[in-house]
Image (cartoon, rainbow, N blue to C red; front, side, top):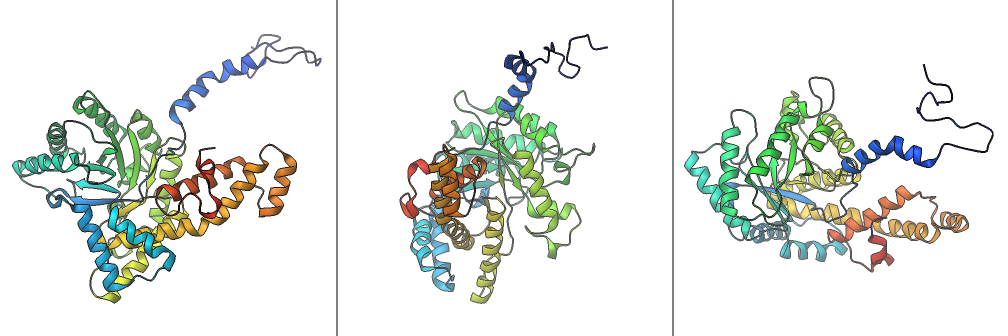
Length: 410
């Protein structure tokens, strides 16, 4: 029985309903304190820092000094030979990018792209990769180890141990990519492993590859991804979709495995929802249709890649995988075109919102001028869009009337 004079739902004293008193605000604070703290800890908000447009995967036995430069040269050579049709306004921007920073995020692969080697061979590659990464060959770098499934677990541990020991310190923007994650316990084990292997200075961070259906739906009928993110204790920075492992695990025929298959869309939308507000970024997969061969074959592969990258951007996936140097031109063409096409309208709407946020009359005026009655959440999205456009090199501050104040998180 609820005591007389007590609110049945809240369990707090109920004041007389004569208009003279109400429940104090501090009581609401007390009731919601635990939930407020949990939300702050688990949902700190989106990361406003730079996110690379892509991740390039290169097997560990193929990395050499100057890798990024070679990829850029090969990309430029493909452009010169096959003539990617894109607007002239993008030509100088794309060619400059390919000449100066062709690879934004480099992941040295010890998993599927590398295969299984003799222990001594992989040990040697782990040490040589450490020296390669210490030289910071790209703005963002990392390694993909083998999975923590029983048959590959010992080798994953050994490679990571050898590499980190040779590396000595953690380079800026360095991550470990864990493939084929299938349980929360594997994430907890990786956290434990990071604590034991990381040096005194710095913290190891990691990404989880969503390649197993069990990462989308567990045996209890619940999606384990939110629990995986929270079990990472702040170390998880990304969820990467694995196009082909995931599709194959569902029994989808090879000819129909694609980033735009309905099964892929479902998995990626679940990933988006699970990561929303956590600061963990969701990354699209790859296409294995490579731009190689004669001009007709290359241009067909480019057309596909352009469409898939653009499709991902429109759905909120700002990063994906690239597997071949000749995919770089279409990566940047799709991204730069997407941001430059949307920037004029985004800048106009954001300026109108900023001018009218403190006045109803100004809001009405801004809505009449732009045709949009934007809310604060939309304004944050507009600012985030412009910030990404500048960070990735698609446009410069000053274009379309964009100034620094418009790029600050709202």
